[in-house]
Length: 185
Image (cartoon, rainbow, N blue to C red; front, side):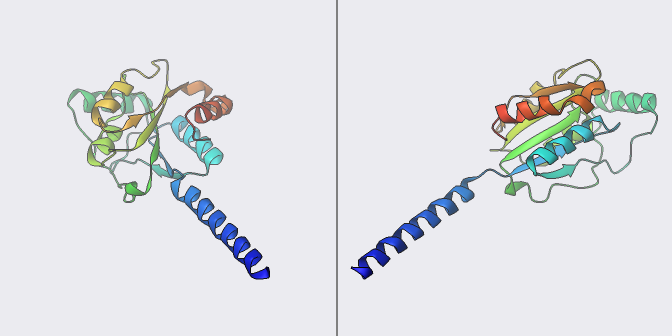
């Protein structure tokens, strides 16, 4: 009788261990990818990191943008108009490890910055879920969602969040609600 009870207990233990292990194996791994010039998008990305404890990757160009706002927006306009894609200083080397990408960027001239376009063109986001977060000075998402869908046709583009740059510091509740709505929190 003791042997039977031990066998049953051992079976229950092993099956529950396998079930728990299976649940962990199925969990989604999230990467926050952000590009920020003035700091608003960085602030939003760091809020997300604090809420999710996800890994984070900053998109940086090999040559920095000017520190002056007007010089930067002029350079951004020229890059967009001439389809110039700036060289990035680093790549995401372990992109295959992630299922979900939270893509944070500012609206530059109605769309994603050319640095973000370069990243999306040089990395394979096929099969990934992409959750766009856009900071802006009044232009909302612009055409950035359509551009992301065009650049990542084999990705699942999740619901987006648009945040005015001047309200980023007070947007923690909006970000949390958005992350809950797209099942990241």
